[in-house]
Amino acid sequence: MADATVDIAAERIRRAKFLRWVVEESDTEEFLHRAEERAGALRELKTSQMRNFEHVAYDARAVSDVSNFVKSSAGRDRSRTWGAAANDILDDLNLRLGPRAKSQAEEELSGEADEMLVARRAREYHLALIREYARQIVAHYEFMARDDGGR
Image (spheres, rainbow, N blue to C red):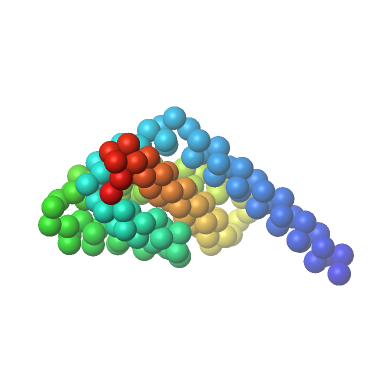
């Protein structure tokens, strides 16, 4: 019973550190600026399309769920609003957020020899950053839409 209590306490501490890291990473000037740029590029989309993007990010079990949504949305978009923004979002997801998540997982588990655990933790961090990124894009979009008189 004592081991279970220690495991629960250790997991709570790990989760608190995890959440603190996500907040700190997503509160950087670069992160917020990129989200604002992407929202500006997607201004012509309907609110429901932006909400779908946010929901996919929150429900994603894998990074590819979000990437596939962005790719399919860009492919179906006749007005070409997703166009360049889709490429930028995919670059942000894979080239900026992914390496940050991996390095954080490696740092956290530096003494662990189990590569599967490190990879699983990196995915967890990556998805958390993606969710926050999507939330920021939608928040900026809604702010811009409000300034434009609503959608």
